[in-house]
Length: 536
Picture 1 (cartoon, rainbow, N blue to C red):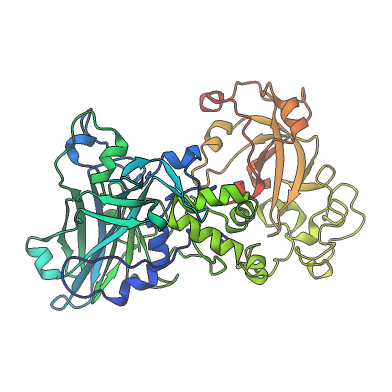
Picture 2 (cartoon, rainbow, N blue to C red):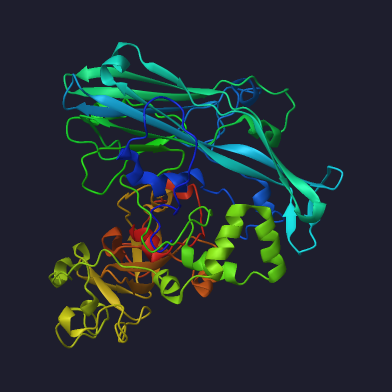
């Protein structure tokens, strides 16, 4: 997408069960919820003949218990890419008005549907071309299902509430023109239920548990996964809302609620706050894929492309390049694939241009820090090159103010920058191409390479300046046997200046005499990282 928070989608009509009308509190998450529902539904190039479209339904799949546990019990975790027979959400709820608080729960999933093409005489075939040139292919489709309930919080505290979320079996027959044959779509019954309970933790705080279970009898033991999917809930996820209640972020809990947040047990799902950033928690989305709080679909995205981690511009360009024959096969594969082709073929130029990207987080540049502590401050674009960096080698003049340089998106913004010759000061030492350093990563995020590379020595290959004004140094490891090859290919590890310790030349007194830490010896890697990815 133009901005990859979540895939885009169009709200789909679906039958509802449970009790009560559908409240509008969930509609603000409609596009994001549909993105979850159809995540990976059909991958580019959207054709049945593509190998990756023969292995589908990877997220939030709930099978009958005996079938999925035929070999061993499932191992709980937040990953919805693991097959299971249940899905459990636990979250915290602040109560504003205990006597009138109500909780709304909506469970959504896909029901698999077999599309079988039959020629005249009702003989099953893999494909059929009618006289008008239209191709019809046998393929597995899916229908969206959702069931909803609204329950007083007091009832949940007294013992809970269980409601059915299954779907009926069915068959639809579509005759083809001129008696050429027909398309038969069949569905098996889905048997499932959801139980909602609550536990009071304090006067104004409760823990809510929502557990959805596939209750269907298991198919025969040697049934293939493709066949077992006929009785499975696919892409299962849950929306929670309510009256006089407020959900608590499990990603960034308020002060004092860290312990009860850690006690929440989420299995095969990951709950996040919905709505706009800054909202206090009116709605919660528990999805089988990991999302941030307040996920959104980029406004530039004209519609979903059903491809995991999609980037609209790239997929749109690739779809445009499909041959006419490939497009015919894609249209015959699935109606949603046909809709993608229609949208791409008729996309106005101004809509396509918006897919190129958007910048939403520009902030004013900060003043350049004193030269002796430059490693602890962002480096502005004005101080990007060696001849402009205060105190750098070959710097005859002070730094030019940021306002004197064009903005990063304008022509000439990178004039004077030279990654191989630029330097940046770290602890008063100018580091640039050829400088030797020791790696001191600060353990940000979940980058395992930080653990393995801590304490290793390396040589700086280049200094790169990001569009946000930050600086990253590309390095090659001294003990990497593929260092010369990686340097030739331009494959480096990237670190910020404050993650590097300057060293003298090889053989100098500060050359390390002890071996690297055991964790650092555990792995030699040549995987390349981009400066942008390292900075996130």
